[in-house]
Length: 561
Ligand SMILES: [Zn+2]
Image (cartoon, rainbow, N blue to C red; front, side, top):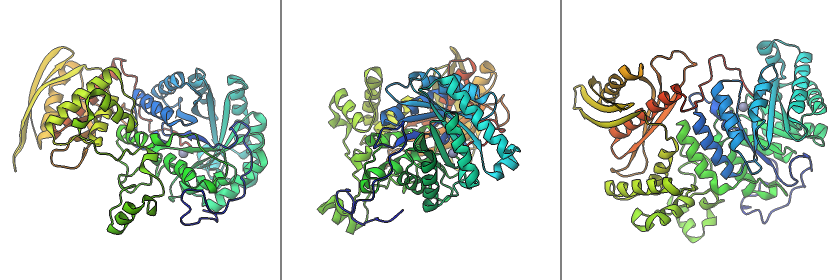
């Protein structure tokens, strides 16, 4: 970072005050940085992260609780599933949050994007085209003039289609490797054509903070009076957050970020890091705040990790399991005397409750509701009753019901699907050195089915038996493409949480519908079967139109900023 990094200046109350930052960006309230979350668009482009429309909606609801300013909901031209997910989020998002859709500057894309977000209270169209010579020459095979013309044309289209109040954002893909004079020419032209936000993507994660801050400063000086300057940083060199903060210090008033830093390759700048850096070091960002409800960060991080199946590394800043753990004796001693000795942020400020209540002390539904609220989840009505029953049952199955157990119960309910296939029973035998034998009985759309199969292990035997039981009725069986298992908490009696990813046996190739399924039980075999059935039901639900699913991006998917 720049100068003034004074050790010990943790609360922001002391230390030298930096020069006030330039007042720019007409559409962003003075004193704020607009948080543009792209977890559902760039984050979802991470290989294997594919979310269903229902899951995307669930993430969007948490982003609204987090109070982000803009939700980039997807890339509607990518697939019918993506279109529908964006439109559903656009319909549901109320209370001031804007919903953005991405589009390439080419016929068809911006029209689909406009159609998807037109219903939003605050539509935000995001069009982009590459501007670096390397992208123009090798990817788009067009000249600089042609790129400039396309940019101008589609910005103008967006402005006309959505009206004067809509936010029209233009991104110059690979801006950090674009010829500076040409880049400035493009930004000036698109603002003249009606863009209200200009975005500077460091698409390939190539920039270094001081250099990137300098670039941002030049764009702010050129168009900052008429448009909001935004940045979109990738983490290929581990600098996404640093580059984003340097951009803010140089006048950027919108930052494009993702929960857990999810995103293509090494990911994007992480929302939690950027927001907590601003909150923890206010003197470095004079008179600037974000509107993010930081107490919702942990819940958001867990939800995104759960639904995408991407674990958060334990030492990840802000949201890693060890981020607030103090293990060394010297640190613990200091912490006991005064938490400020080693703690620059409190765990409560990011929504880590830190207490370990046992279920007995929850004293009924109200107590459970309060506890869940502390953990970042608003649950009531039938959902609360169901979680309460499950928590009581769990208390019989294991000694202590921890926060992690409660969160796992809440999460398990987020992926509820129609029950075409229901498990009625299973058994398995498995021993050292031999094959496993599994039997499964199910009802498949009301019809009783059972099958027995051999396998190289208990899970394989049961999944194969389930395949044989459902295939005559459904006409296909799920094909397992990924399997993960983890213990929800410590202890030998912990619950196992299983994630599977599956496609249908009749679908081939990279464009096939892929879904995830989760299972949760103190019996890991039961959790595995449960996850497999959730995936099976989602695939069937998508087939008969009950579950609108986002399809995984086809192999020919365009590269995006
Ligand atoms: Zn990106």
